[in-house]
Every structure is written in structure tokens, then in C-alpha cells.
Length: 156
Image 1 (cartoon, one colour):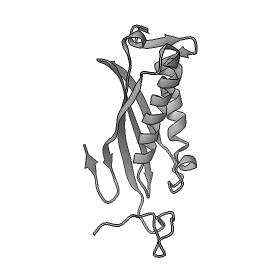
Image 2 (image 1 turned 90 degrees about the vertical axis):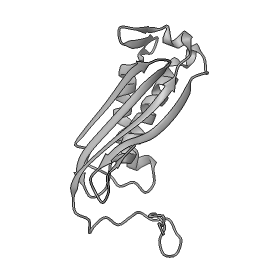
Image 3 (image 1 turned 30 degrees about the vertical axis):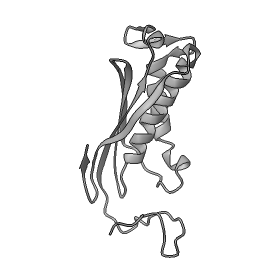
């Protein structure tokens, strides 16, 4: 039977001990979407949405990158990691901005939380920058697409 990894033998929360694990190459890919109403999609020009706050997608890419580097500061039992590479890509597909975030490192624990964090922070930034047009936007379908390295790989 599987057990929660962040609970000790006394049922207290704890950080997983990774000291005896071997370092491996780690990779994770996460995706989320922001559904955008037509009034916002109509602002899409030359590959981005232009707002009074600046280019929305470009700003969200920077925010997602900054956010993924702060994961261990925001999620209590995430280990601090040395991020060796990351990418945040955003494209308009139909009625949604689709955000893909990938993270790579060599370490003792995975980078899936960092990838999920990067995608979500980018989505929140899009929401923040576009809310002047209305609050109907919806952040949807945040999920892990793939992870490699460590004990097991995963592909959604």
C-alpha cells in the first residue's frame, strides 16, 4: 500500500530525506490553460496580447520562470533545487492561452513541482494583466505532462 511521503512515523509533517539517493538527470513538463473571452482574444496582435501593463505573454513567460525558481519557498516540503534549464512557452489555441513549462536539473529529487509552479504563475500573470477586460477568464487543466529521472518516469 502506498503511503504519503511527507508524514513521519509519528504522523507529523516532514521533509523527505533524499541524502542517500543518487543524483540523476531530471526533467518535467507541465501544462495549464487560461480560457480567454473574445474581448481579450481580440487584443491578440503579432503573437501577443498588448495591454497597458505591457506585452502579456512575454511578461507571463518571465513571471513563470521567476516563479518556478521560488517553488521551495512557497511549498513547505519541496527541496531547494539547482535549476539547470527551464522554458515557458505560451501560445493561443482556440479560445485559450496554453502554457507549457519544462524544467531540467541533475539532482536527488524531481522537478515536477517547479514545472507545475512555472505554468501556474504564468497563468496567474495572464489573468492579472488582462483582468481590466473582465474577470470571466478561467485557469484550467493544470497538469503534469511528463517527468523523467529518479525511480519512475511518467507520461500523461
